[in-house]
Every structure is written in structure tokens, then in C-alpha cells.
Image 1 (spheres, helix red, strand yellow):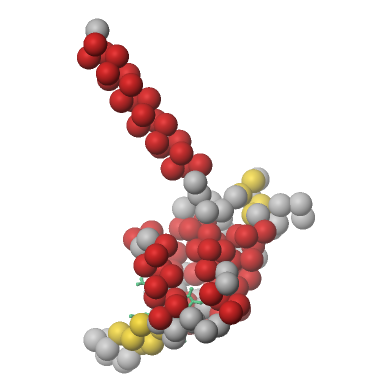
Image 2 (cartoon, rainbow, N blue to C red):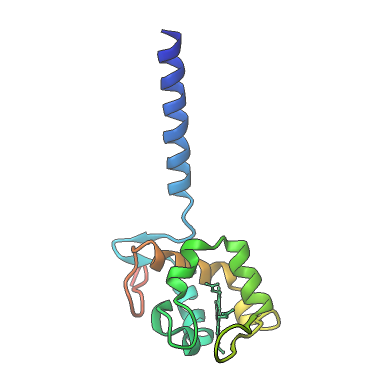
Length: 135
Ligand code: HEC
């Protein structure tokens, strides 16, 4: 009996944790429409990142697919690259990720850009300009 109770307790804990994790998405999407934060992330991405990383975070011949990158990076790792930049000296042609640490329109909205890319990575947001909640 005691084992069964312990097992149920553990199960409840695991389910509870999964629920909390699921609830802690950085974006909100209702009926395919995004919150202000996620929309702003799309806007900032389009302004500052699209020219190298391609439309909708999908990557280009020059810079990696960020929709894929954020599946394997923590937000801290992501922020670090965006703020400090990175140069890949091993590539045949030198690929440079410029530092955005001094670019206010980017550093102020790192959370928003992250939210947008995570929504794309989780497959809950399609390509193109996202519709806004309340539109
Ligand atoms: C001038 C072109 C350029 C712009 C603009 C640019 N990037 Fe990059 N970015 C790159 C290149 C090239 C790399 C790959 C560098 C390397 O291989 O080390 C990269 C790498 C990254 C990575 C690491 C990806 C990984 O899988 O390790 C992140 C995250 C990133 N960029 C985010 C951004 C964000 C967010 C913006 C807009 C605020 C942005 N980049 C704008 C060229 C650019």
C-alpha cells in the first residue's frame, strides 16, 4: 500500500512538473493569434535578423536556421550570441554573426525575439506576419 501511495505521489509530481513546464511557454497563442510580445518579436526579427537568417527564421545559405537553433539552445546561450556576436573562422568563407549588444531595438527585446522563434520552433506558429490577438 505504501509503495502504491508513493508511486501515485511521484506520478502526481511528474505530471504537475510537466504541466508547469507546458504552462511556462514564452509566448501566448490563441486560435493561431499571437500576443503583443510574440508579435513584437516577429517585428524585431524581421527588422534586424531576416537579412541574414532568412524570412521567418528559416535560415539562408549565409546564416543558420534559427528555428532549429533555438530547439538546441537555452535562452542564455541565445542571448549570449546575439549580444556578443560570433565569427566562424572554420567555415570556408568567414561567416560573421554581428554583436547586437549596442543595438537597443534588439537588446531591449531579446525576450520577444526568443518568444517568436520558440513559437516557430514548437510548430505552433506558421510563416509570415502573425495575426495578433484582438485583430
Ligand atoms: C550580418 C548577418 C547576420 C545578422 C544581421 C544576424 N545574424 Fe545571427 N548569425 C549570422 C551568422 C553568419 C551566424 C553563424 C555564425 C557561426 O557560424 O559561428 C549567426 C549565428 C546566430 C546564432 C547562433 C545559432 C546557432 O545555431 O549556434 C544566433 C542565436 C543568431 N545568429 C541570432 C541572431 C539574431 C536574433 C539576429 C537579429 C537580432 C541575428 N542573428 C542577426 C549572421 C547574422
